[in-house]
Length: 367
Length: 157
Image (cartoon, rainbow over all chains, first blue to last red; front, side, top):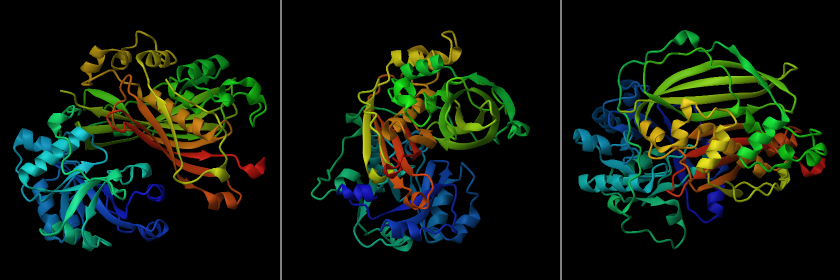
């Protein structure tokens, strides 16, 4: 927020909406104070019409629903949120599967009880946002914007301007519930002083369709071999050679002299060239025991967590120890997704851990 | 593949929250093939979606895509380019939110989000947190992440 404000953008606050998790014990006061910001708490739940943001719901909401359920009945979610004093908002409405639009188009979902949709979403592209806006306009549903920020740097990419005071969750809910209140979705650049706020944005017909509408929602309990989770096995050796480092550096246009210039590197802290950390991402190791997930037709890399503990030098011999750390599921643009997190622990010839790499693979069903 | 990499050294004391480092990367099919050659054989079945249109279509993709571990390597390079030769990645978290397609014009951003002054003043390592991301010409951010980087200090020179 500091960097956004330095550039003249106006962001007063944000709502943290963890997926399927509402932890009331977390206190955001220090965060709010440090950045002079309003920091509120909500939740993003998963329903049979995609993801839904819920603000200010009372205890009855959390007693009614199993928040880990990835296919909650949307009408109940919107109704119970309202009846318990809160408000539900259809998140990233233009996104395949996890937004409301395709459920309306393909299954004639009526959007009963839905009074607000997020039609300007920082994680959606322009086409997806355009068709979300068209859905809201056609159904006479009010619209908000949100950054959908999973990282600090995307905070405020899209946001909502409210007319009236919003300093706590009650005031936010009050404005969103009131039929006479005024609010509009904005893009970050539209918060600059004097910026034009367009009366209309490009329609979906004017934009290049770009979504990845694949797959279908599934509902059955996930079947896999739970006994292999957490079992670490030896996955093989990696001989780190100067040639391998050079080949890797060539492949990614690496120019950092600590990796490519031996004369420079001799004067540095390692007294010679070291391997770029990314080189471990290309090492081939044995797979850990297969959890044998009974789902999906294809898999992609979804995420990576890496910790680098010690430098890796030419001549090092590294041992890989691999395991399946975790298997879990959630819904995404392409419907149901199953994640397998595999971990590789790299140890050098002295028995010292040099790196820890976790790769999260997502399995999807392609029709 | 990359327009610029200055390799300038960055020092902890000079880093400011909100500071941005931007480079452009355009991974071509040739770049992908060269990267694949570091870890897979030309006959590997896994290569399909990374190298040709038919393989991509089979997996429901519009175009051939850049392998996830190549995107991860490009991100690690962005971070080490930002940090300079004496900087060190402590940890890196990357989220692949959409496919990176061949020839995507990627604006690669490293943005400083936090500077660990308290830890550094207490004699600990000088750690800076940065957000990293790729943004393509369709205004999508297919790869996003965060990194913790240890930087050298001026006063240690």
